[in-house]
Image (cartoon, rainbow, N blue to C red; front, side, top):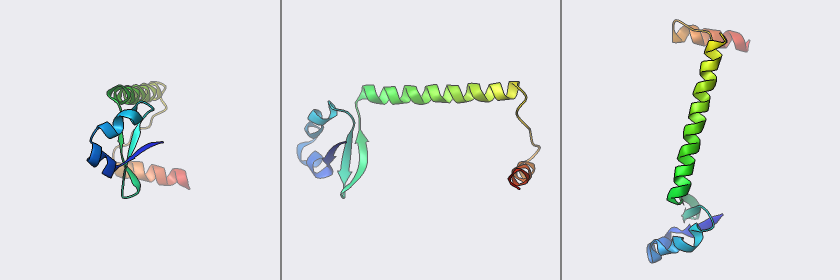
Length: 89
């Protein structure tokens, strides 16, 4: 794990990250604990794209469940909670 203390960042500015970011994400340590993660714009865009792809996959899977008739509808939240309780017994 690439780490840099917050004090080093304060002292050197972004130059403290330059050598480390080449090897991957950098964890910023504050009070002896990882507090923040610094990543390149390319890595950030990759994470955003992965999250979007996962979201689309979940929506498609949900729509497939609805289309296959494996979804029950409830008239109220109370009715849903009762069904959950009954399933757990």
